[in-house]
Image 1: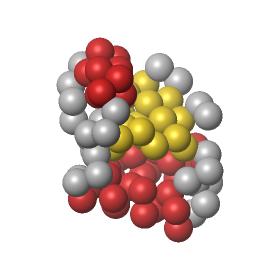
Image 2: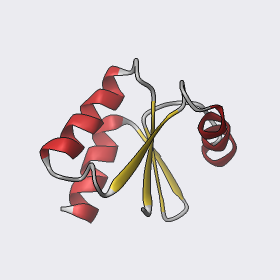
Image 3: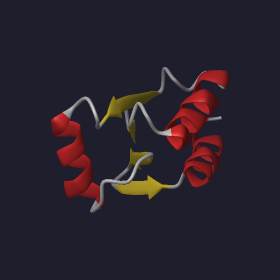
Image 4: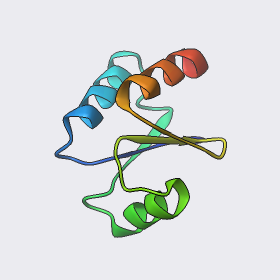
Length: 79
């Protein structure tokens, strides 16, 4: 998958993005990794994006933060 969503199981903003993805059938097109369960994912997020904020969507060498911005980006690029 070319899209990766960095998320945390406890994050309501992550759940918002995940809910949008599920409702629109995008959960099969975007890999979700949980930084609170996967230390390597957490390190990749910090190293690549420069901060540990979630949700964060990685695609095409771009690190996108903020749930509303991620949803708009997914609408424009995957729907």
